[in-house]
Image (cartoon, rainbow, N blue to C red; front, side, top):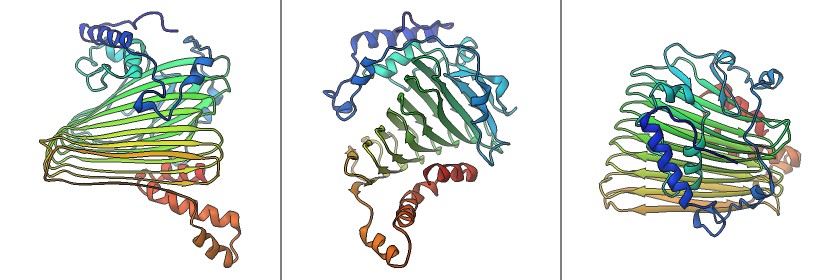
Length: 411
């Protein structure tokens, strides 16, 4: 499917791609025999034929559907099949946004590309680093505080044929900067797509980066999405992932907390139906003392959907005075839905406060009975309970129109 290593224009990216190729050649596509892929079976990928060819003609009607009430004035970035379209974007003057290839040619990826997303033992990271040519580069300069959020619309156009798409993003939040970035994923068409997306995010000293992903693609989309974050001293990073639809989605969110007094927040809400399968793997890697992380993932599973949550808190020996908390809570809405959850702690320091936990159950029958006894229909009562369950995550969305948009999607 991929015939040659992607073009490289600097010695740094050339070496990084060659190293990734060497790692790729020593790895194999993960199967359920791999512990990290025990509950996510990729066998259906083998049944499909994919091509990497696509037209640069853009479906403007599809773009019109990619808008959010209340965010018309937000900064806007449009990517179709990973290709950045500047002409359809509204880019703030005080930050730098380039296509991945433009950034590579300008040498802006040197010492960044493949520097934190390891390829050594990760098949999909190695595949992506070897062949990816599309994606975006965002740099928020030192002490820049954006007055509006940046909304990135990712459209997968699968109207004509099956596609395999490799996307690479680099986001640099320089010291003292502050920004909110929301990425919206949608699909046009009913052909099968496989998307590999890797994002490397660098949050410098005293910077604050608040990120969101709204995954609402069609039931024919297979996605392996890795976000690798590096945090420096006194930085804050937050990621909220809303997962709604897709055939099979694997989300890897790994945060290297590599400075003192960092704050890290990882939030997730899955509301799945039909045969959707979403697998969330997270890692909060505390490397320095006096930092704080808080993780909350919640899931609602209906129909024949399946969820996987594997979250790890890793506290290294030098990371004394770490406070780290993790919770995974799930509700099964049908007899055929399922969730596999595995919260983990691995602690090598002795002066820390860490906890984790997981719960799985059904809707509160007592609360349901109480509401029905007061004349509320069963349908409305269930709706209220689901909204209350999701509310804890929705309240963490700091962009009000985006919160309202998500509330509409799950109502």
